[in-house]
Image (tube, rainbow, N blue to C red; front, side, top):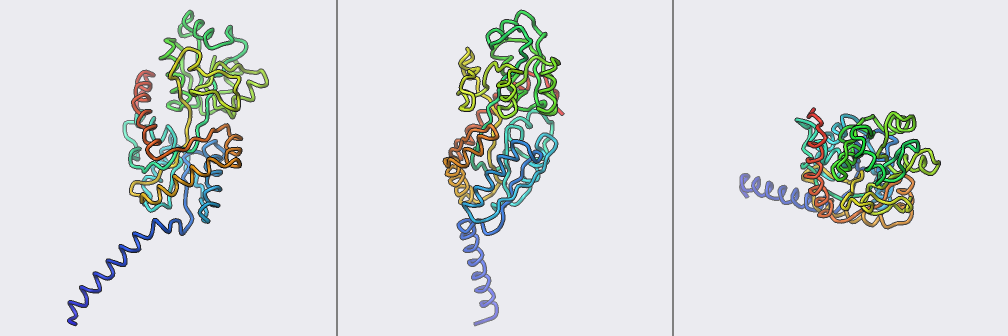
Length: 325
C-alpha cells in the first residue's frame, strides 16, 4: 500500500472512531462530576433547592452534582459563566425569572444571551404571599383595593429588588386592580420584613418560606397568594385570582437549563430523572421545607412557560417606569 493511501485510510479510521466516540458520549453521560451553577448566594432558596436536586441526581446517576455559587448583578454573573461553558453536559444552570426573562428588559446590554440555553426542566415554584400590617385599616384584599382607590399613592409595597418577582407581582396587582401604590425596593427579605413590621411600607410580596411564620404569629396579615391555586402549606389563604382577579398567577420558579449545544440525549436524560425525582416523597418533603412546590414537565412545557412570561413581563416592566441600566 502506498504511504499516501495508508495515510488517507488512517485519517478515515480516526474520523470514524471520533464520530463513534461522540455518538456514544451522551449515552454514557455522566462519566465525571457535573457542575450546577447557582447565580445566588449560598443559603438562598435557589441554593437550597439546587443542593437538594443535586443530591438526588447524584444518587440517580452515580456521579457528583456539585453546586457552584456565582452570585451578583441580578443573576447575570452566574448566568454568563454557565452560558460560556462548553455544551457537553457537565455544566448546568439553575435559572429563574431574573436570568431567563426579566433581565432582558432591565439592562441595555446583557453579558449573556437568555435564549442561548437548552431548556431541561422546571423543578419548582415558590408561592408569594401579599403581606400587610395589622395596623392598617383593611383586613382583606378587596378592602385594601377599595382603600387604595380612595387614597391614591398613599400605600406602598416593598420588594426584594427591582425586577424581582416580588416587584413584578406588585406591578401586576396595580394593573389588574387599577390602583396607585408606590414601589419601594429592598435588597431582600432581611430588609423588607423589618420595614413592613415597622410601618415604613404598607405591603410586601414575600416568599411563603419567610412570610408565613409572621402570618401564623399574627404579626402580619396575608391578603392573598400570588399563584393560581392555593398553597398546600397554607390552604386557608385565598389566592388573589379567586378574589376577583382571574389570571393572576406569578411566583419565583427554579428551572435547570444547559449551555447551547448540550446533546439532546443528555437533556432528555436529565428531564426524565428530574421528573422522576419530583415524584418521590422524600424529595417533595425537602422542597416543602423551603416553601417550594414541585413542578416538572417536558422541555416543551418549560419553553412554553418562558415564552408566555416574556411579553407579560416586558409590559409590566415598561408600566413600572424602571429605567434601563
